Length: 253
Ligand code: TMP
Image (cartoon, rainbow, N blue to C red):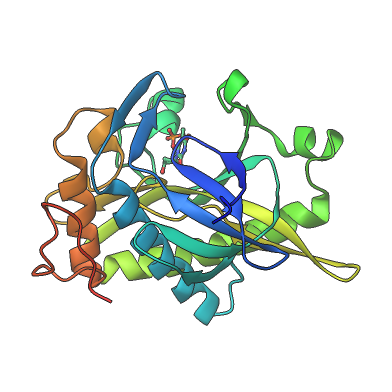
């Protein structure tokens, strides 16, 4: 059998050519990196959890009319997605101060922000994804003012959906990162949510205890990352507690 063609390999995922034009297969690896890949590990089961969780969030977004690249899950580690042209920005939405914002402004982590704050980083590993103002984005042609207005509207809808979803299971959505892609329907260009939405790209804190249930567990050596992601999945009903998960990943369809 012919091997399928690898289109791109990133730190946590691989993209392969899809079965039809305009589609790709997104494979979730178990690799975890932090601090621009200065810190690396392989965490058994992470890819399976993120595949399932990203499916869950993107399906929910599609269902409320927020367009995403997600088409369907193929197996434990792979999903079929629409091919997009990725805008080279990390779109970060913050509800509470944490991470780089807390550090930059000298705020205590967990301080509630007056309103959701959106910021943009230029997606470039060699430069360490620097924070960029809107003026750079427009001047360098990464996105137009109209694109940015649309991206902000999408990001706020994702924030409301994700915050509500998490609140329902006792988790605070502190902040998250999304990526946006362009797709064309003939001459008409649309912006859709791409990449992944998972505990790798969000900060998720238990509302009662403040326990971290996201990639900070790995970044800051706070315990077992798979246990934290499994807890998020369990609360959302994505992977039942009795699915045998915790040892070798097994999936319940
Ligand atoms: P930060 O506080 O480190 O800037 O991170 C803000 C949010 O973005 C947080 O939810 C983690 C997420 N994030 C990524 O998804 N990828 C990255 O490379 C970084 C630095 C942060």
